[in-house]
Image (cartoon, rainbow over all chains, first blue to last red; front, side):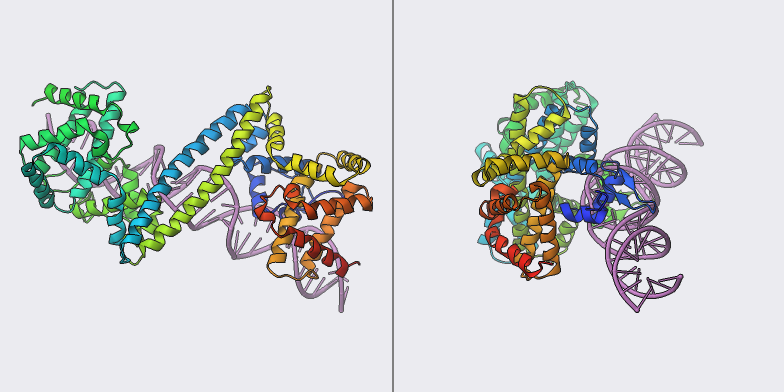
Length: 256
Length: 256
DNA sequence: CATGCCTCCTCACGCGGCGTGAGGTTCAAG
DNA sequence: CTTGAACCTCACGCCGCGTGAGGAGGCATG
């Protein structure tokens, strides 16, 4: 501290483990400005500023954003709502991070089982650890004949390397999109829904080679076991049985 | 899809739930560039590009950075190290988020107990929920006489509103800094250590009003119960007993 | 009073992963 | 040939600072 009971930036920064640049930044955004300056322009933080600094540090330790802290300290914020909202955000982040950790752990185990250090292994392991592929294979085996299954696999091979993309990315995405339309009350006759259905049928035809029995069986698998087919969480596929009906109505409406 | 078996940005973006801007961005940074363009300059993604897109999506779902994904797909990365390092980062983030959640929950409970919606309450609650203050109060009660305790409180009042700052922010920071110097092998006679000790003693004198018995007792509290005094985790204050000796040696070396 | 050295000042760019326009061109359908 | 949707390329903004660059204030010494 100074003789006059004030602190300069460097001293203050060192004292509380911040950098000078940080205090400059907080000054420019108006979060914490020193009450005084020397004639030469040097910042002088008074004891009142220290109090504010202490409050800023306290709120920052909660992970709040700087602007939130500023409006909070300048009054006009209900702290209970603030804390509750922030807590909700933190819990959401925790949930997604937790499931990510699980995925990474299984992936690590898969990689430890295999040996060679190539990136393609990483991608293979990713496919293997996702519950998606095996579950879907099982769901399909349950309701397709051996001939139909072989047909599907042959077609996937014929479609080529994009097959994985079509099956694992675009197809589930089409379903998610359709479900969003359905739950927001869009009628099945809406052109957006029809476009989705048309694309689904196009993909279905491509993988069944035009065999209507096979594509009907695949549609049945999506209707009865949407969780296994889409790779979504069971909760997220709630009501996807209804979704199948919804899509059927869209097909009837526009046979073209 | 197009007649020629290619996709345009808009179609591709919609198909896999990305935005056009995202695909543009991935193109400019070289993560995913379409193999072809129309004469007019429109992007045309081929099936090979779809394969790469699928791989990018897979790795991105692990939370990897775009540059990491690029170098990973372009070869030359050991996936096991990659996954393990990333997992470590995720676990660290989880740990800090978990402890933050605990703090927020206690804070929420404190706020629910009190009533009025003012920001000062939030700060009061923050002080209350931190284990810091009560634990330190107990540690001090254990080794100070009633007179000394009253003296300390009077001095804190006299120091004014900056007292909280000095006690809760600067003082612990001084200890953390000293501990870092000690563990990195800096000798007690080093000027940096002496400066720290001088500042500590200055603060101590300020709060004890010059009463040497009281300041000695406070130092004793820090020596014997560093966890309670600093508010750090017990693990972080491992060896702070030795730290007190270290500081004493710095004092002896430079009585000035 | 000059010298030297440390701390301070104000710009201003950089990061990651895009969002969000602005202003102009190309494509497919009528 | 015209329309309108979809496409193109800049280029700035976000958050919380880190990291210089280039210059002025402030204090101890010669």
